[in-house]
Length: 439
Image (tube, rainbow, N blue to C red; front, side, top):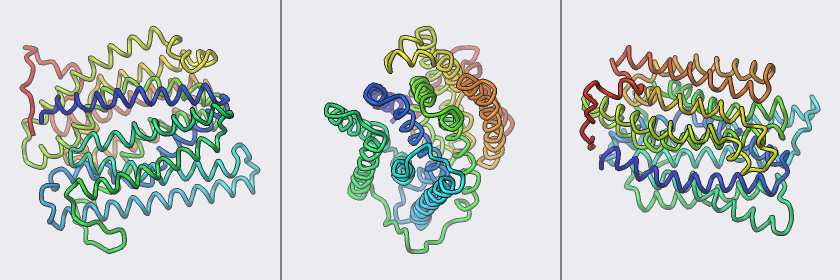
């Protein structure tokens, strides 16, 4: 199947997921108080961030090594990759959860931090375990090109189910933070179990073991730290801004910022619908020595995603207050924040998928260096932005950090592969479209 056909299918699924996502967020904003909605938003972003930290880069590892190896299900390399990646993800996620639970309880006891209840903290941090395993399974089936199975449970079903439960409950009483977290955690656990059973019966894979020690190849071992740092850097820039607002400015401000953040993420659906497909296809092309097809795939992706992102971005930018009112009239105060986040999303598309190219084509160490610089700089920008400019300062920090991160990856790709990923390079002087790429 061609890159564009796969991406089109993915885009349709993601648009449906977007409808459910925004319906879910608007529902929570309408039936909960702003402070309670801000707490739920904080926990969701916190779980996403620390589930990636706990996964030790194994999501990227699956996309890098699984596609070229997937056809030989009896190979020791495939069995070792899957078992060791699963074990490392499970151990790392449990360790991250345990450390955070202990640190939070100590902070409550020694420092007197009482912002959130103990029950909400335990439930909210438990999301790290459920989200971490759901993300691992999603990347696992992505490596097998089972894109609908990667997206539907992770981005569609859980919000649809939890939204239905919250709506029914709201007819009887106003949902509390604990109520919504219980619905979230229970639904994610059920969906994780269902997807594990689906994989067992529908995907031809070797038997996995989380207990038995299975030898791993050195190529996989050498990428653990680079992929870990790159993954953390990526998710940090995506979710740390909401967490910073919650920590520095409180749950009510987090609610307004979260609404703007999630609306701006609508622009990422075009980019991710291609990148979900592009990453394993690049890995296969690189692994099978098809170097001539990599530039064509990258340029095709940049052209399409930039055009679609720019069109939607212009609509959202000029009609920002009207979209924010969907969450409630008070949310209009996030107008400037929303517009800054829109600019960051458009910039992300314009420079292209240089980070994915480096990680899928064997330059993970160079990608790690760029990610480490971007991670430290992003943290500094966010703290300074929060202290100096509040929510607006944090949104501006996201824009600056996005520009720095994308430039670093773009420069590495040009230097190492003589490949430009930006929109200017995607349109050759003749403006002739590349032929369709098939893998």
